[in-house]
Amino acid sequence: MAQDINVVVLTGRLTADPQLRQIPSGQYVMKFGIANNKGKRKQNDQWVDQPPNFFNVTVWGRMAEVLKPYLVKGKMIAVSGRLQQSSYQLEGETRKRTSVDIVAENIELLGGGQGGGQGGSQGGSRTQGGPSQSNDANVPPEFSGGPAEAPGQGGSDPFDAGTGLAEPAPDDEIPF
Image 1 (cartoon, helix red, strand yellow):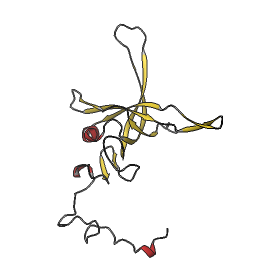
Image 2 (image 1 turned 90 degrees about the horizontal axis):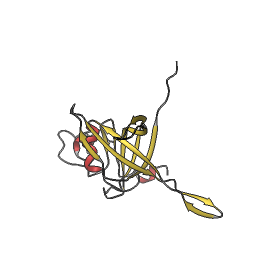
Image 3 (image 1 turned 180 degrees about the vertical axis):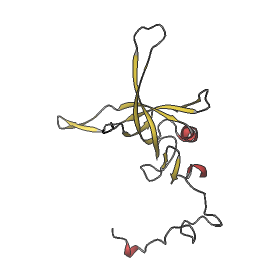
Image 4 (image 1 turned 90 degrees about the vertical axis):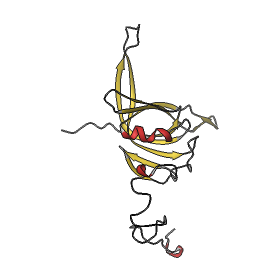
């Protein structure tokens, strides 16, 4: 029997600083909203801005704790995860309300906004349920997916011997 697919991938800017809290079990949960701009559409021979879509995002565990300092209002991020519907009832109301949130499994810092960064995907760092890699100088070493320098190496040149990286190709060998 085939399984249902529940995957969402969005880029957008944070609408406010995230709220981080620790639940009684000790696990961290962070909530924030992102605005996803549609861009422009041609209407009557003129380009017209389309209103953005707004989404609520929930991040759980260590990823929430580590990312909190880097997520600020206006920061451009990419989020991938799944949709989760929940229902709640406000005090004094008899009607139940529903909410659909994105439960983040991966977050990539894209730069821009007050959080700094290089802009675009060039200056980002990525998490996949936790730390994995980083190109952003503002991300701590434990978040970068590896040590700041190779063991036994004193320099920070990524092309030093022993780092596992190849020598850069000469300009005349680059195919573009």
